[in-house]
Length: 224
Ligand SMILES: Cc1cc2nc3c(=O)[nH]c(=O)nc-3n(C[C@H](O)[C@H](O)[C@H](O)COP(=O)(O)O)c2cc1C
Image (cartoon, rainbow, N blue to C red; front, side):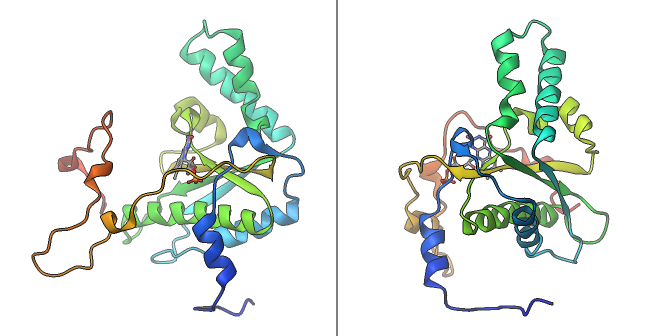
């Protein structure tokens, strides 16, 4: 049994968190993680906070032949949408899962129980990030993607998902061929309020982007 850690100084971990960077899937090369590495990563992913011990996630590992099978599924999904899809586009989809040696899908699975759906989904997001960090700590680069196929009904069905399942992320994993430059990061002070009664909140609204509409929260049922 692992001995729990609830706080332990680690300048290395802090430095890592402050400098971490995703690597584009196409730059994730061989060698990929071994089966033992993969088990280690998933164990770390499954260690996230989880209200009510519901384990509201599960993992699909794609490597070797499974990546080719996923390519065939993506190609079929696209052809179903548009039988006239150009051949180059079909080839791109067939090769999509060959961009990295290993892809692990983290699936958010809503479990019946008293704990809110929203919190179950948050736990799945945390599992994605733990998975990335564990892979990084083993020396691999990662890219957390959803792309179009996370939301495609044909693909969801072909993967065996049902209506309680949602792809939280396809985590692409491999040895980084390049490390990208830094990207813009937010100004933390614009997003942090040291709360006092009646003081305005730093909500970061200057980061709002046009082209996205706000969710209509009159219909949101985040607690169900
Ligand atoms: C749920 C989720 C889904 C994402 N899906 C995509 C995606 O489909 N395509 C993409 O380019 N980036 C996607 N990203 C963003 C990348 O994972 C990554 O965070 C981004 O490229 C910024 O790089 P950084 O992690 O180094 O800051 C997604 C991130 C999250 C949290």
